[in-house]
Image 1 (cartoon, rainbow, N blue to C red):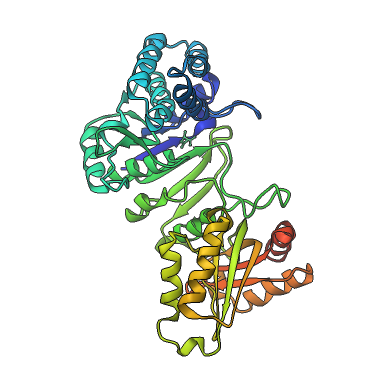
Image 2: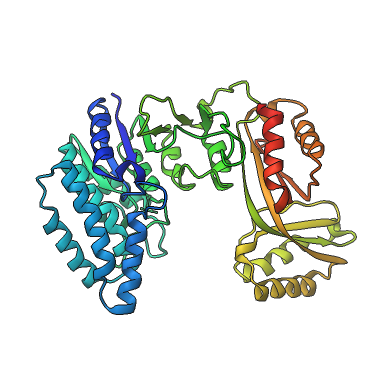
Length: 439
Ligand code: ASP
């Protein structure tokens, strides 16, 4: 039997009118049984998301010992929603209780989580569904990461025999018994955890866009929509900045082979994008599925004659990086050269100098050079591995746009070619690749 878990993002919860639309969506399909919601997002450009208002409450609390001013903004957002929906829920009492708990708990995570909590209370009321608090079913372990097994069992137990339920996204309980949140955008992960626990036939992720686009619409006007993506392609694209879904949200559903469908709450009849297990992926005929990228990386270029025959060279370089707790994005290498690509945000002057000194001392390179202001662009697609000449087309398109490639990395899976170019060439490079493969 088909069973769907639906996650509604912030813009789908932004005001009473959209929440009424959600009710229509849920009522239209009996399979849509379990619903995960985010905190209300922006109603118009320039508006403030409830989660950001709540982080503001935490700041006010730290500064003044109370958060009356900022909480009054949160209060009026939810009171407006309750009024628009004509709820029988006593919203004032729920908000009073929430404010009281905020003053007792006083942690940033607890305060931030209240947007989802209040959203879910409202959605449960509107949908005539059981409210299940994420505190009771999502657990983190001592290291602060998700306790997958405990969570899975708790969700299964809580939902067993329940016809329709609403759960707040974004948070769970830490092993100290306190509320703990995922990173920003983490309601996607909560939705995926519920989908896995109930072995859903589909995880529907309702947003304000009709799916993934082949590249950033701020760079290319009206790029093509991607109808179908594999988990692997999604991981590559969302890691590189395509931000429709939280990049960690796919792991729980991927494990259980559950497809994800990105849908648009404001255009529910649009087909959206379906993300399927790689084994079920059918080539669409397109060589490239999508293009994504990010600016601001630093490349550390290292050269030493006979590097390839010096046993332990790479390990020594990487231990310097590890000791400084720096994340490395890519390590392109040649016979006598290797480069480390690191996000510039992670590198301040002190860390950079410590890294350069450390590498000089441990491997005595002939040359070590720092190249900054680099943008990385990933061209992704299963079709790339089966079509001959894809890299040639890619490089020719970039060369014809008069852009110099500073770095290159092609993973062994052949579904992703990453090029590094100057930050200033970023937009033009994406345009050139798009024109070549989709134009
Ligand atoms: N409300 C949280 C955020 O703004 C989590 C989410 O929306 O998924 O990041």
